Amino acid sequence: MAYQADSSKAEEFIKHEEILNTLRYAEGNKNNRALIEELIEKAALCKGLSHREAAVLLECEQTDLTERIFHLAKKIKQKFYGNRIVMFAPLYLSNYCVNGCVYCPYHAKNKTIARKKLTQEEIRREVIALQDMGHKRLALEAGEHPLQSPIEYILEAIRTIYSIRHKNGTIRRVNVNIAATTVENYRKLKEAGIGTYILFQETYHKQNYEALHPTGPKSNYAYHTEAMDRAMEAGIDDVGIGVLFGLNTYRYDFIGLLMHAEHLEARFGVGPHTISVPRICSADDIDAGDFPNAVSDDTFSKIVAVIRISVPYTGMIISTRESQASRARVLELGVSQISGGSRTSVGGYAEKELPQENSAQFDVSDTRTLDEIVSWLLDLGYIPSFCTACYREGRTGDRFMSLVKSGQIANCCGPNALMTLKEYLEDYASEDTRKKGLALIRKETDQIPNPKIREIAIRNLKEIAAGKRDFRF
Ligand code: SF4
Ligand code: SF4
Image (spheres, helix red, strand yellow):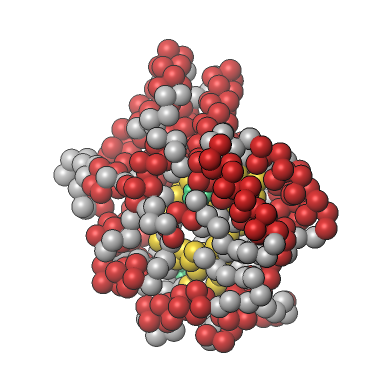
């Protein structure tokens, strides 16, 4: 079996030997200044890099060239995403799980964690709590359990979430992070109006994958790795991939991640919508110290920077696993979406858990409220955005990608960020955040380049102040 990016078989598009060859190639060229300079220049054209090229840059040991990589990552981030940061929150529906993932406290054998599954009424309460914080975009999370959380339960949860109108609150985009499933079930998710289907590979290293997933359906490497293919066959054209850095060597998984992106592009003509970059951390019966491949802050920054310049059109996501300091660093290097005010326990938004009832999937490192995060982003010069416009306007898959590649999407993202921030400031912000946000909106509105769009945005901002909601480009 040769390496074949457009194959439908996991072991051909994530070819182990190709990853090993790439690792050797990168190691052999880590001090090859001429090649590294050439690759930086190629990346500056914003057409992306192959996994081999990216691997060389990740290995680069020359301080001045590494600085150039960081500099370019910041430039590309600015070019495609400006100073906007899209906000979202995870919503945990159920932590019953039949799998045996050794790094996750929801694994089936864990007897110490409190098991919970939200009823539709409890989901309602959670959603109202999230709406009252100001969230518009959710990522649904659920353990894999055929009896506790079958697809019908997930679909009903999605319907419940979209139906709730509380004061000016609405959840406008529900992304879904559930276990690998069938084409038929992905079709049902598509029909339910989900935004992105998100599934982390955890690690692309088959042997380690099997050791880390000793039991349950998730132990099937090929079925898991080919999940995005099935999702796309079912018509879901926005998919989000990611690995859990620290489970395996980061170099291997970094290459696997880019090969997966190349595969989706080669087979379906659209790369992943987002890449998430979680790092292993402690929780309930899991100790991050047990994972010798844990990634340092410096390496993590480099991973983010090289992903940014290798797949400029793909959004990047980090969660509250990361500390405030780490988030600040990677936001400027490439991350375009962050969660805020997150609870990683089942039912944690409506009610605070007692310590003996811990149902959290991981310990949150950034424990600030959404308002504190919005205020912090404003201080750093970012525009916190609650935009959900694209999929609601039918801008998904290749339609979305062509707008991103031509740079035209910025005409939507900029004003949408300002209008959704304005809604947030009117409905949910503290007085201090409100003042800072309004000043930023005034400044940024003047800088909308297209006069027609600027005029409409100014009109809409006035309408929002007068009580109207949900404008979008
Ligand atoms: Fe279950 Fe997902 Fe945790 Fe694995 S990572 S134990 S599949 S919830
Ligand atoms: Fe995202 Fe589209 Fe909104 Fe831009 S306009 S922030 S790409 S949803």
